[in-house]
Length: 289
Ligand SMILES: NC(=O)c1ccc[n+]([C@@H]2O[C@H](COP(=O)([O-])OP(=O)(O)OC[C@H]3O[C@@H](n4cnc5c(N)ncnc54)[C@H](OP(=O)(O)O)[C@@H]3O)[C@@H](O)[C@H]2O)c1
Image 1: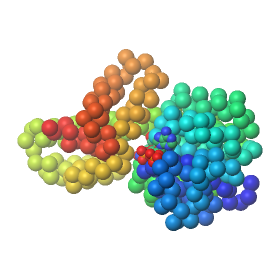
Image 2: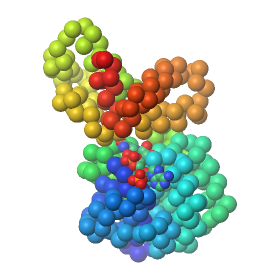
Image 3: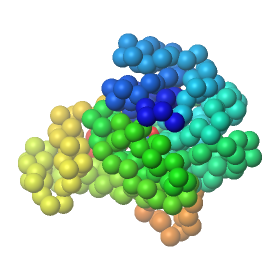
């Protein structure tokens, strides 16, 4: 592979758009594709090559990245729209969407059957849209060790750190652990704020009392600040948070995770009330009504 790998980025949503921008900024030749054409046009202005289809995007790529909503979208792109079949001999596919463990293993099986020369990396990311813009993501990478040097310039362009696990599937497992903790933190913030409201406390006083507390992580502090400004535009949409809790619960005996199960039911109701596209912190507002 040349010193600068050619990259194809498929999926230019809240995460894919800033990630593709960082690839271009790092000087990596980047082809992009998105289902709706609008987001790709923005990337063209920044120097990316825009492809008309997933297959066209990946033909000459050394590294293909998928960053879309869920496993259905990944399979639609990779199989139905011909991405996997069109990939160059021996290319790397870094699957970075959060699709859980079973679906990752299903996709690894498809790669083994249909394109055994392609190297699949299961590499979801920790960090939301802000960190993606600021190159502060953490890549939870897993898959064959021999491609680490080849993929390094790509992950370095996207993230502050890459954590390598074992075989493909490990990254997705780590991602579910990360997001379960995140879900509990989001719910903890929402319920603490709702309790303050129910106890008749002024919101500014509650936020002031929590400021600098050892209980409040950097992430939680940023979320509390946004809640203080009534700012709920999505960084990590509630619908994706619910998807990720459900992906985790799918893998385990639900009876051993009753609190996560109840959290998922509550988030499901909030999504049904139309809050799915708002940030996960919107629960803080929802619980006060
Ligand atoms: N947001 C976060 O904080 C965060 C953090 C870490 C990981 N993630 C994970 O990263 C992935 C992407 O998240 P995001 O925030 O970028 O989501 P998003 O803003 O909702 O964007 C979703 C992307 O997936 C595409 N897509 C959806 N269904 C598709 C289909 N059937 N065929 C082709 N493309 C399809 C969308 O295309 P259109 O534009 O055409 O709709 C869009 O490009 C998800 O798996 C998410 O769980 C998100």
